[in-house]
Length: 590
Image 1 (spheres, rainbow, N blue to C red):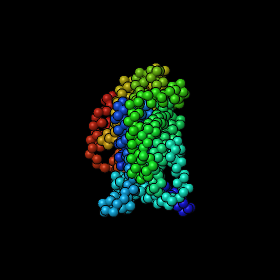
Image 2 (image 1 turned 180 degrees about the vertical axis):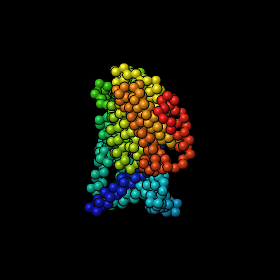
Image 3 (image 1 turned 180 degrees about the horizontal axis):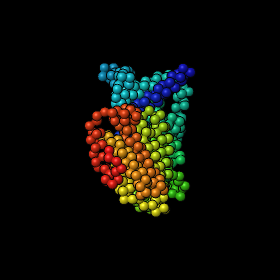
Image 4 (image 1 turned 60 degrees about the vertical axis):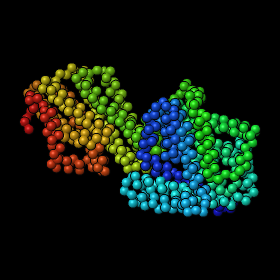
């Protein structure tokens, strides 16, 4: 094997890995993350978890990616360790699909049908159709389908390139002597383990083994232990991903490791132990690509069948390794392990953003309650909530910036854009909640008593604020355009209420019904209420504009207020009537 053969092998491996990554990304995006989202809704049924693990891995073409995702779910508290075990076992079976796809390169035959089945015959068609879909497709579905086809073609071309580059090794005595060392199960397992750990992909190492089998120098006695070792080597990715995670996430990674180590040891003892008495004659037979796919499938299915009933024992072993007494740091709100799967990461970010929105709404509503009935315990809770919301904004915004660089789909990009535009408004709403809390505290400490007219006006505008806040929050959480459209007319009504209440306040000041000190408190309260309604307007505009594939708040408001929008005008009139001030609170008629 000369230098150019080595370069062709490296080139083939690079194309193979790139094609597998492209195809996996396309499959994951085409599924829209639906299979991954199902992982969050698992019951304690281990068999169901196993089937989902098989399905997800078969789609995204990577058991390592599935396991890392599971570690992230466990770390975030979405999934229990017991549920994760079934998924991990399923991932080991699901990854065998890749070997079967790669075995297509070994199809031989002179008939037209057999030649059509060879990748060299249809990969070119896949590549041509795929590149057209990628370049001309206008929808995510077409572009992702194109990515799958192009990725598959590149993967197959890389596989053939690797096979061609090592074809000359069949007569090489040095190569043959090296391969014979792998007949020793220990060396074979170590070789498979090291290669997979370096590549961090059992599918890639199986592909290399299948390419080497084209030389005719790989026998069953060599292939079997290498395949066993590959299953252990693939655990490295999950072990790396659990660094710095909570103890249950570390346990999930160790379950993956123990499952493969114990499975390999048991199968080794059974297989090689029985060989001493039965003497399997096929071990010296040469294998091809399909044979390796069969070995890979039988081994993984056998290990799963053996250990699936012992999932509780695997859980105890992992818990014994990672003890409860171990110090455990708080997990972040959003786990960066999900960034490798943008659809899942976007969903998680949306879930956390929803929590932030709900917390912000609750904090503001709690502050409004304090205006009428101040309570120190409730005030402390509101202050703690505001600090928590600040932390939410920092974590979410940082996470979304990283996620934006991961090439999310168009739908996910819209969600990311919406979150980036709105989480700042929810954070500012909580800031105004603190301002209102301070106003309420001043009212309580100074025993300020508003006049009946002022109190009635405050009750009306606070009721309007509660409704606009609820509409804006639900519009964001549910991407509800109808609710979002109701925010702006109510915001205009709140602005009108603020102006009228200020006019009435000035009238009371001049007539001596109100003190200057009371006036400052009253004015501060109205200012914060009006500012909160502005942030609600920003949130609603974000929902509407981003769904319209743009974001220009000023342009939207200009168009809305200068057009004869029937629904807007109807909503404005309805809210104006609903939140009309008592006659005594009106300074002037408008």
